[in-house]
Image 1 (tube, rainbow, N blue to C red):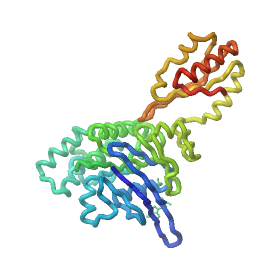
Image 2: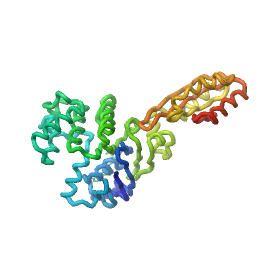
Image 3: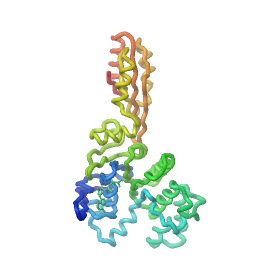
Image 4: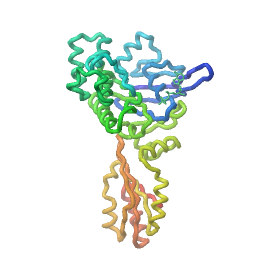
Amino acid sequence: MISIKGLKKEFITKDRQITAVDHVDIDINNGEIFGVIGYSGAGKSTFIRLINRLEEPSAGTITIEDNEITNLNQNELRIARQDIGMIFQHFNLLWSRTVAENIAFPLEIAGVSKEKRKKRVQELIDLVGLTGRENAYPSQLSGGQKQRVGIARALANKPKLLLCDEATSALDPETTNSILDLLVDINEKMGLTIILITHEMQVIRKICHRVAVMENGKIVELGDVLDVFLHPQQPITKKFVHQAMGNDEDENISSIMETNSEGTLLKLQFIGESANQALISQIAKRYEVDINILQGKITNTKTGSYGTLFVQVTGNDSEIESAIKYIQSETSVEVEVI
Ligand SMILES: Nc1ncnc2c1ncn2[C@@H]1O[C@H](COP(=O)(O)OP(=O)(O)OP(=O)(O)O)[C@@H](O)[C@H]1O
């Protein structure tokens, strides 16, 4: 749906020149939720604002459904932007307008009649779960409700693409979850393509299909979310994955090894379908071994689940060996002897 090629943005200030986005090439599929993650200053905001030309690129092209956005004049761009909704970290609502009036605003600009506007606004209010709050002012709403108004307003003209600029960064974890659920809901119901930027790997894990990791203006890693969680390549990606998992696996392994010196220590990795497999009971039935579960965890991503289990296997050496061979040859669970 979207093809971004050689995208570059340089800012020239009095004393220095900054390349905020540096030769970015990405293709984004129709209907996907695509996340861009990076630390502060990586260039995420600049990147997302280039897509609807809130920032003008220094080089490169952005094509959305055969329409080269980077080639449009101001009038053409105004029309193209009706297909691109955007939501912001600090909501950017009009404080002197009610919820309904905020949502009606883009419809007024698009010249939609009063009657149609009223109907569409009500649909949107129901969609985002704000029924009954039509006449409230933004100052009377919670952060989550304000973002719901932002989402409704962004969807008013039935866009094909929604850009989310740190849309949950100002919200508490529970409200973040409810807003993420809403984004998934509209992605699934309306087939809306979503590009979001965030510094939180949990946001990526919960709702994105694919993720790009950004550092110093460049995309340093890109892949399916499950793959990136399982096999992060770059040091920065590993840091983000650890952040989302809430611990450091290397430290875990050494403390597990210190306290469990008997038998054979195995790390089992369950991916996708195999996460539901009753492996431990199968092995215990087949082989003369005892299995002690030391630590385990399952992580759900939008594209599948994966789990890691540390077990201590005791018993006769040849039985343990047969059990390991069985896991390797007969199941899709990855096994590592530690
Ligand atoms: N208008 C501007 N003028 C000059 N430099 C800018 C401008 N906007 C951004 N920059 C610089 O470009 C780089 C990338 O900034 P950007 O805001 O895109 O990063 P970010 O990853 O979104 O970070 P944050 O999450 O903190 O906003 C930074 O070094 C920033 O100082």
